Amino acid sequence: MKCIYCKYPYTYLLKDNQRKCGQCKRKFSPRKLEREQKLRSLFIEGYNARETSIKTGMHFSTVQKYYENFRIAIALYADEQYQLHAKNITGYDEYLYLPKTLKIKKNIHKLQHFLTLSYENKVYNLMMPTLQHFNFDIADEKEQKILLKYLRFNKITKLTKAQNTITQFWEFFEEFILQYKGVSNEQFIFYLKEAEWRFNYSKSELIHSLKLS
Image (cartoon, rainbow, N blue to C red; front, side, top):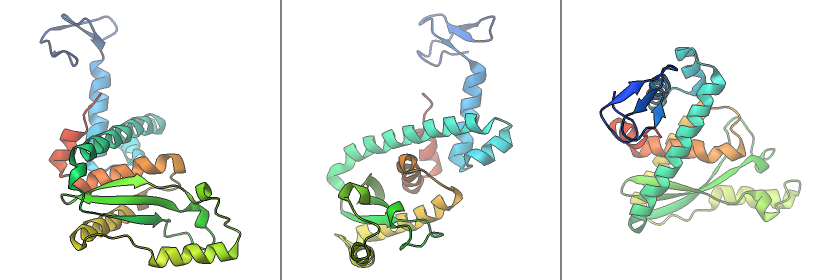
């Protein structure tokens, strides 16, 4: 079996069923590698952690941990791609997201605010400051009215073509996020980046871009 680190063609089996490279001397577990590859494939196919746990018989918390690592890798990949194409930005607009099951007036403090940039028929998203950052008083009726007006009318669109791509992404994101319940503020950016990744790339590109560490 080839070494997964230096690609040396010869490794030997140890008593604990790990393999050790004959050149770089590093060890790896074929069983763990097989598990990672299986989870990676299911993640790319669009199975969520609970569905994958049922399908593979793995503990949910184990699958969830792998999925969190996949999303971190995706976020890093998105940043790399943005740096390569930053000069090609053609438009941008901001979005305030709230689950459709929640009423705006009672849940203004739960809004997620992000900026979507468009380049080469792809998008890149940046999280914006929360209402708490601006010391917004959710109990103040006047401030609520100001924000509701902002929600309905504020736009910073630059180009029509870019806006079409951005709007398509928002629609895609709204559909994508429905399968997840109770995403925390800390984790929201990673689910946003997963949606961005799935929107931007074909299946073959998804496979290529999500590499195992």
